[in-house]
Amino acid sequence: MAARASDRPRVRVAAIIVIADALVLVRQRRSTVPYFLLPGGGVEVGESLGNALVREVAEETGLACRPVRPLFINDTISPDGNRHLINITFLAEQTGGALLAEPVDGSIEAIELVRIADLTELDLRPAIAAEIRHAYEGGFTDSAAYLGPLWTPEDGPS
Image (cartoon, rainbow, N blue to C red; front, top):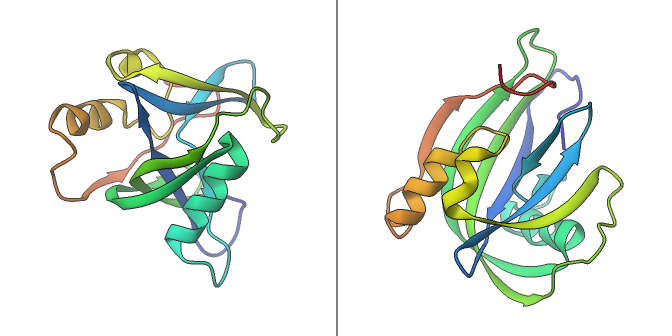
């Protein structure tokens, strides 16, 4: 979910869930160009990061999951400074549920399993496909990394 203009950053959690060498992604379209996101969303006031992750993954994908640990942290700050989102990406494991055949959230076009090898071919936002692939190839053993500010214009990468 994109951050609303405000005087404070918003916090978004996202899950890296691997199923049979493929990553669970949601495809959205806010303009003419579709893009992909890791399942997740905004943290509500008084909600823990882990609880927000479990709730958002279930709402968007139908999967039950367990947060394992944070892998990446980055900022998404619009060039005009009106939107500031702090993204915390967790490694998570599926504990139940099944992928929804049809998304419930109207902003999601589809829920897809994408092979890890194909991630860098997609418009993934934030643009962390190479980092995910590297972490996967290393068995997700590295410590959490701060990736800095990452911004992708609404019309996609240039």
